[in-house]
Image (cartoon, rainbow, N blue to C red):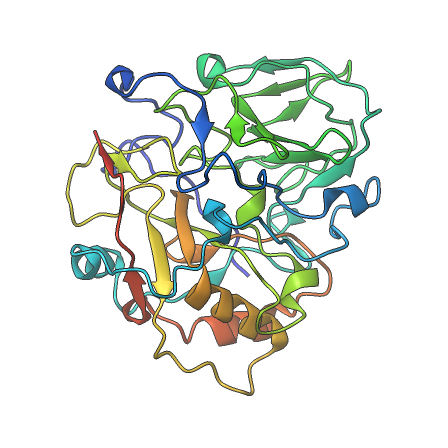
Length: 349
């Protein structure tokens, strides 16, 4: 199982994933709303967090079911294909394989995937010191316990995402490059707080801001969890998150940030949504987990969220994943099996 690849270097066309190239002042500075989500609709909720057990890092006790109109919950199976779809897919690689960037066991000394933790409303909040992108981060304190799991483990040299759900106050806290300090506080390159009970998902955020994710998206809603995947086709009822090695200096809402200096229209922008073609036949012999993932990709698609290995899907570490089987099944899906859906609202750099 291959873990998340190192970020692009200065020698590649992509800038470091956290670099903010320019402010988008012309777009204004209003609060961020999910595109297509009307004020009269039910507020977004990224899952049944009130039913989650304190400290349970794997189970949200319920399938993720977002309200109608939520970007991650939109059925895009009939969405129009973007005119640039073919050139974008060709630039990534028509024979490139779909792969899981999550699993059981460890890789390079840490769990494989992006973990999270659930806390109650009484969890003490601690200071967060932002070491790189404080001007684009939501200020602390955050309710991050000392025991919060870190992506890749405490000794990781990678992205070191830390994700915390406050189930009682309906808030999602996400950190990038997070390091626990002796006094219980945390240092992090940047952080974002998302409201789970309000259409203003990130109050105060401005267009062009990054988050703990290079695309400016929340990470948690796009993660694949074993609980939902094990239910088979239809078990995952939301869009997924994936990485590509090179992106364009542009983004598509609900993304809010680009991380590249390359303006080639053959490259995907952050937030581009890919959909598995309806004609792709999911073998009946596939595992429930693969069936759930591929069915979700036909119905909800997947967002370009970060730089990394091409077509690597993000998920939560879990001892129950069968790494070898899932890799073998997913790698039968290639770039040529996808379409890029219409990139409405594309923001160019």
